[in-house]
Length: 280
Picture 1 (spheres, rainbow, N blue to C red):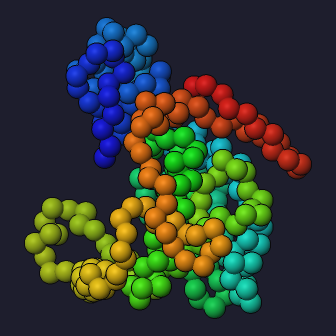
Picture 2 (picture 1 turned 90 degrees about the vertical axis):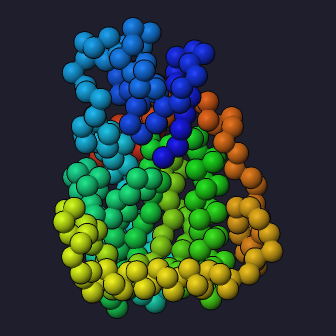
């Protein structure tokens, strides 16, 4: 969880961006100022209907609706089949219902995921960066996901058991605001977390035991991997190797508060999707 400065001038307290962002005025406040008179929107004055814990719809729906309008099954299918020649896609688990993407068991704090099944039983997922979960502009988000892909590829080349990762193709047909990559899924049952406090005292299930052993094995392999540089890894421009890329600094993006800018995509049938940035 990242800490950000409170929007009130000269406040010495930090705010948790995820918990304390105001969905009425799009600013971020510490706990002391969230409902303080200096927080001048209707929510800050206590007249709004939004509570401290915002609803799932308020957190996800606007972003997911815009995202879904930019994606389609045919384009995803075509792109992954080009990335994996000779293999055909059986199913792209894509739904037009925003809740299916936002509430999926594969959804994370910083990414949305769309599962892709090939006819030979191999599965991938499309990993899409959430724009409203972090206060960053496009460039650091792109640098971050490029470094993620390069790091996975570097680990794999060093013999570490990690999934395959594929960067967004240079000829991608998706909207430039969609920041994503593809990754292969590790076969086997997923780990099931403890949903009830009493379950933590019960014997682990077989998938959980496998998860713990696999994680330990992965860390052992990580210890054996050698890389003589420190920094964010990126692919070399000629794609022949890896190098330490530009340092992704916290500033000045930290104060830019770009989450106030949201991609506006009008709903249309057919043709291109004109877009513009609107201030929220």
